[in-house]
Image (cartoon, rainbow, N blue to C red; front, side, top):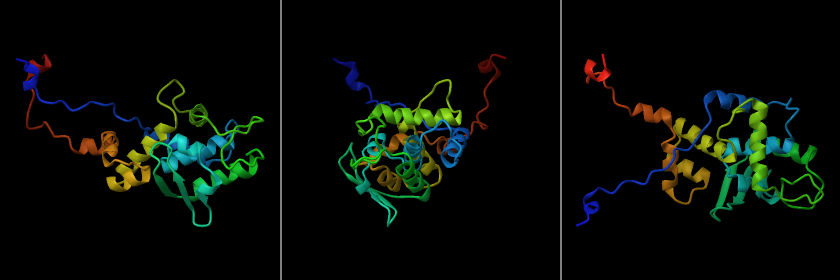
Length: 216
């Protein structure tokens, strides 16, 4: 007889998504909204502004084309690389201005329809490594996680989702904004919402702990 058949089915475990601390958010916002970033390119600034304020995946930011930006109606329309599903997001002034500044002041002359390009003679679409480098450059400029820690555009996506949760946005809306195909994809973000989790904690005031437990 296999005793394992009597054991309850354990829920599959997964890591909690990382997110930015409040102090880190303030420093990064200061860099993204400020105009004196001498060590930061307009391209990197625009990429992370999009990631920070929309939660778009790095691969979707890298694939953005001029056709995806509806400047007249302030909307971003795209087909997601990961799911193949369409996604529409509002184009806020802070995001639109960052993209426009890059296009006007720094983007190399090219007939390529991709917005963000390399600076070499090929003027190619950016690779995933470039997206990570953009995130790292912004965090370095902001003085955040200089001694290590989670970086990359995925961190900004996770932080965006948690910020929406903490502001009381309903989970179906968040799933739609993030472009989730499955509604259960939001569950890991819920587990990262420490503020809500703490609200669910039970007080132990009515259950005093004996001195013998504390070793006194």
